[in-house]
Length: 110
Length: 114
Image (tube, rainbow over all chains, first blue to last red; front, side, top):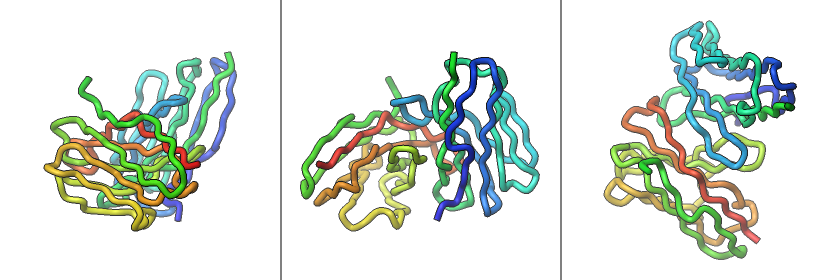
């Protein structure tokens, strides 16, 4: 069954508005990674979170890992058209693989 | 370019035919992964190699699927007796050594089974 759930599935925002996608797991995660996939492209690694309650920033992107390490979020401030794409979280529960979420497809309306 | 490459980029085949895809990982990467991605879904893990050893296979990987990584370099994924449900994007990714190292994805092979 699905290990990692992600919401919302789709999000349309006006350029300049903020955007947030949420990732939830029923199981405590060891690590979580975030990827971006542009339309027609392949997933590209953005960041990895490891510690409980960790917050990391990359310019307009803020990534959080929940205190219980069961959820994570990606927040984009003042979206731009270059932010268009699908954002995936991928959770690590041990073993040899990460479990990818279903992704949130972001459309930015100019 | 020293990224992950995949060949072919697109493959159209008739149901029942066999197909083979190739992945060339980043040269110093020990780990190689195969994923399948369908529209609106995230990548689904298929199998994983540590050097030449195939160490894990998903339950999704039926006996029609086989993967190899001879000499721990490039990898091939073969699908025998293709079915329409096999239509998807097949992604390859490689990472350096640890499972938590960054995975670098290739451009994928889009398979269409008619």
